[in-house]
Length: 54
Ligand SMILES: [Zn+2]
Image (cartoon, rainbow, N blue to C red; front, side):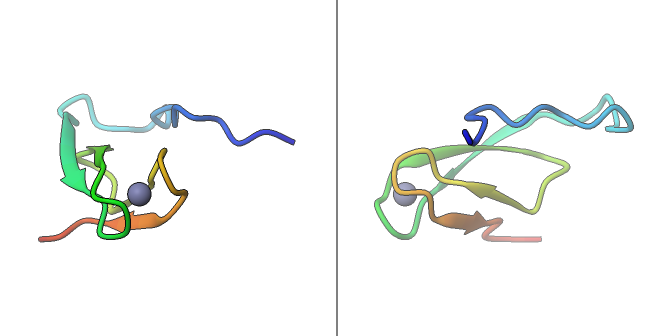
């Protein structure tokens, strides 16, 4: 099985969603997170990165 590297936006996603960049607390890599997501999987170390601020 393979985890998709690029998470497709759900069809019901609001069109105002924009990509944001957060820093992975584990490896320090920059991880792209959509504005309508609260967490994303780091591509570098597979750590679940949560949005630093609400
Ligand atoms: Zn990482």
